[in-house]
Length: 482
Image 1 (cartoon, rainbow, N blue to C red):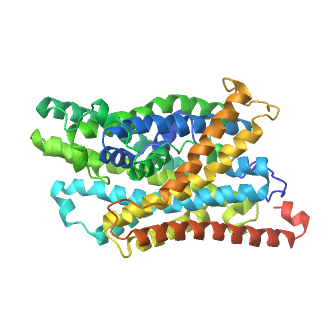
Image 2 (tube, rainbow, N blue to C red):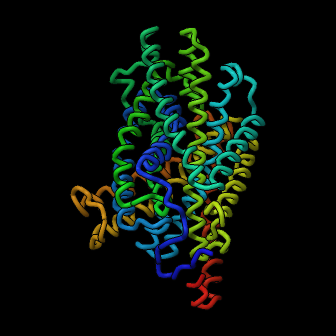
Image 3 (cartoon, one colour):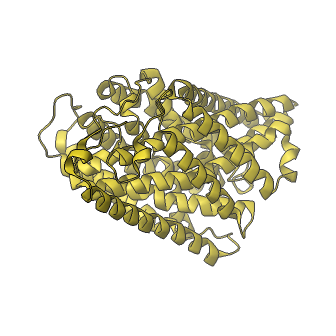
């Protein structure tokens, strides 16, 4: 049985997880965690100005987050990631709520990611298959993908990491194919979208500002590797080095991928759910190479399955840590005796994601469900980063610990970038509540987003108080014991 921990902010010393991830695995993990062609499609649908928004959002959130992750993960390389960081900085209540909001936001993120996976998988049957796909297909295909991702992670990270790695390789291959498609399209008929100064200038209307919050969300994901610190070989060195290798790939996927879609497809015709595959399919058929579209669909689908597997495994470590700390039932802190995986956490995530898939579809179209899931994801996913940046700012002035990474500019760099990241996160949360202009039922969309957010916060508070009362009711010796 996994050992309990003292309430004063202890670390997860040795929960029994296997160290299966080397530098190569960490690099691909970061690429898959931080990128998704879902966001490339969303950005391309907004037009060429999204390229400028990508850069601004990257400077305002990706760079501060990278600095915070390197600083905090090297200072506290225990399993549990931002759960541990916030607990160290602000105490157990903040630590729990940080982990809770991150975990629940990821469960909400799963349906949007799985819808994107299901949409791209349609191209395996040819481009015409999408015309016959309705809500039933999206729900069934999404549940199938969720089942695959869960099953592979239950049998262990030694197996599950290969889905992550395949996802990372296929994501990069998809980008190379997308760039090639952009070149072919340009040679055939020139660029389908204008990249002049006027087109690149970001809009300042309210709907444009709301879009910025979605792009900001696309830059997060680096922090996920911290949850796996207990399973990374030499995490103090592997995580910073993996980030250095992954960062250029991440930036290239977003900027080059968005530009390639816009060269192949006019911005006003880009499907925000299927934009990347749409560009490849259109160009492949124009060049008389329909098989290329099916090959691309395989790459993109495997890439998306890699994302689902990664988030399933990473976020299961949060309820696992909370189970060890006894805030959640003790079964969450136990590992499978053979596979050494947190089975209770994985199965709980599966159940919640499956329910949200069905609820998110109710009362709306496929696109309406997707938009609500994206909005809810932005709000809930960004909340825990308020804690992360606040923790980095507070701990930046603390004396360095042995093995802690050196940041250029020292504590001043960590503090200033954390303030920038905190402000960007707070603004993005506020903007994400507002629905898209073409949402047919704006009141219902806002209600769903607010309901999911309120349910998350109140649920977390209730679970924490229940766990705190339970911990106080048992002797200290048992609280520490095995």
